[in-house]
Image 1 (tube, rainbow, N blue to C red):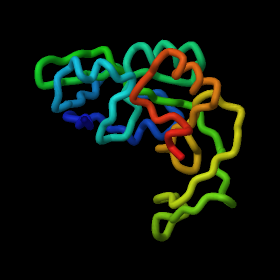
Image 2 (cartoon, helix red, strand yellow):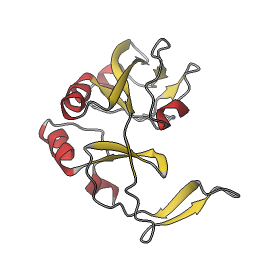
Image 3 (cartoon, one colour):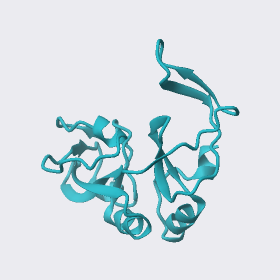
Length: 162
């Protein structure tokens, strides 16, 4: 169940520190019934951006003011809804332990292309993007515990990523 973006919403903007214009609503199409998606707090999609329900939005909003929530439309086989949101995290941290990580650069650049092994240092953040690889979203242990406590499913939590 991986949703597919069906309109021309550009997600590269989510890898900088600016709020995005939310006058265009991203639309994601899922090949299943809406009831099946409702049990997940976060929905996988082909753009690899956090697409979360209102429950997660409320939890994140209580923990950090460096987040923008962009309303999204989710279309399913039987119905559609506009109560999911793309999470735009506006803070960045340099948490990558380069001495213990193994990665490749995009040829001819110093931009990381992919990882073979990742090690992050502890940091003073609740939720942030990794400055060396903006696609990675980092969440501290306290937020992880809050999400677990509220029964959130569909999220990749740290011990599940190892």
